[in-house]
Amino acid sequence: MDICVFGAGSLGSLVGGLLADTHDVTLVGRAPHVEAVDAEGLRLSGAVDRHVQPAGRTTVPESADLVVVTVKSFDTTTAAQEFDTMDLDAVLSLQNGMGNEATLAARLSPPVFAGTCTYGARLHEPAHVECTGVGEVVLGPRRGGESPLADRIGTAFERGGVTTTVSDAMPRRLWEKPVNAGINAATALARVPNGTVATEPGSSVTRRAAREAAQVARAHEVPVDGDEAARQAVDVAESTARNRSSMLQDIEAGRQTEIAAINGYVVEQASQPVPANETLTALVRMWETEHVSEL
Ligand SMILES: NC(=O)C1=CN([C@@H]2O[C@H](COP(=O)(O)OP(=O)(O)OC[C@H]3O[C@@H](n4cnc5c(N)ncnc54)[C@H](O)[C@@H]3O)[C@@H](O)[C@H]2O)C=CC1
Ligand SMILES: CC(C)(CO)C(=O)C(=O)O
Image (tube, rainbow, N blue to C red; front, side):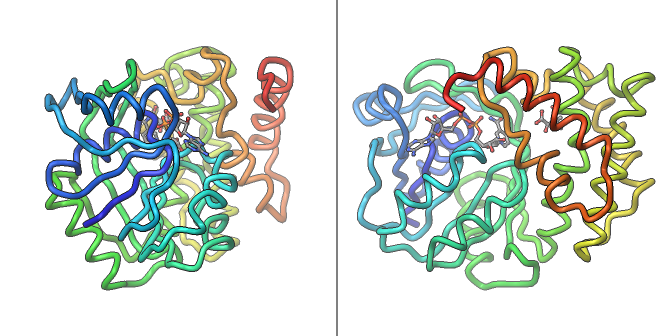
């Protein structure tokens, strides 16, 4: 398959790098990283140890079978504008947060598939990405159901060595992130590892945010049980106890967060009060207003 990864930072470089031995992969991103990849290849370290040679570019190629989108959620609209001239069969978002697929589908004509990814990635330096955890990609039609094209992408990912499940229930899968949303925002605001929100007083914030997200999911006809969501959020906090959440890492690095696509999405989509998500969103936005210059 001819695969273009758009937004080759940490995750895009890892996924593109894993696929590059089996498929024709082009990483589109920023200099100096993609230029170094094009010149000297890409080193994968950590849980995988490999040197691969995808193409690296700062602009999109004319065509591809598939574009895999791995920009942060707040860059999705700009990204779509940059590849809407490409000749494409399909687009797959592997981003976290809600609303990315709808943003892409509103601007592009090829089918847009939804994906979630539990691989961990960190770009150390140009042309060197570390796999910080082997996980799984789950992908499928963004509104649920089956699709031969989704099956083809799943098979191509599996053949490329990326553990992949094709799902007919992507709407429910996508809501798992907002269900875990209390972990990201609470740990980022309190500057604590995930394990701290598995016990009181943090766990009541995490549980409340998860219950609210489940309530909004149900209002959108996505069946997510509130008690189960609360339990799941605390279980994830426990099982990732030593992790510093991605939002905490963003705040520590002084970067914009994905709050708008996670807790902010719950607030936006709610027709009833969601006070825990409203408060977490407002507090993270206050931090961003004060600390992120490019907002
Ligand atoms: N890093 C990880 O372990 C995981 C990340 N994710 C999700 O994947 C998405 C990406 O995360 P990361 O890779 O960590 O972020 P990142 O910031 O390392 O990578 C995004 C890259 O996109 C590039 N980019 C943005 N707009 C662009 C444009 N118009 N043209 C060219 N390049 C552009 C940025 O320069 C950056 O290098 C997020 O939604 C994140 O939540 C999901 C699972 C794991
Ligand atoms: C589940 C959790 C909170 C693990 O750290 C995560 O997905 C993140 O950090 O974005």
